[in-house]
Image 1 (cartoon, rainbow, N blue to C red):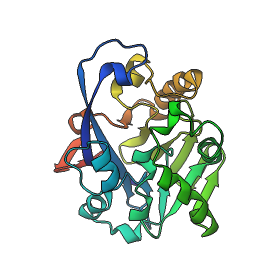
Image 2: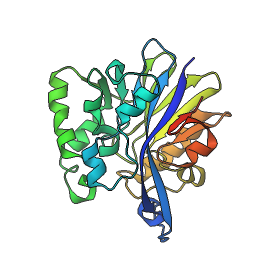
Image 3: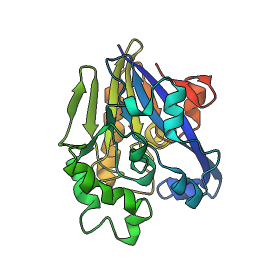
Length: 251
């Protein structure tokens, strides 16, 4: 069985109206940034790569620590990460890929097609991207470092990706079998617990029906144990156990 950690590497403040669909409130909303290593197998895969200090400076991220540093604090050398499951290609999930030089990156084909197609560069979407990081998809692909995934897929026994879309065209969530039951890493299918628990979408979407369906998928995959890990919610620390500053044991 595997163990799952949530590693917090930065934070910023946003507002409810920025993140919740058709929400008018300007109440402050803290947002945390995580990556998620999966321990206990022959090699430690990592869910997402976070971003580097250039994005942290440009986007006003507070208390930034390199995701590679956080992974090493959790006991895994960044160079030993063999696979990174990229939930989607927004800057905060993909732009740190260079921090993990020996990883192969698993990305949904529809996600790659969207960001290299006619819509990714439009004002509605480009603010969520790091263009330089997106451009390196080509060179990494030619170096055999990109694995294109189509739909749901088993990574290793007990670890699966599930394509849900909604927030982005090819968003995938990850399930991990643990002693406590299945852990669902929602990434941005549910930024906050409020999203999945009240069925309120976020503002940044490519398909509202897919996002609403993703909430149902999260609940189905979690089952009765409900080990759901929201993508950016400070409540992750409260719902699970912080074993060291910024290192939260999920299961």
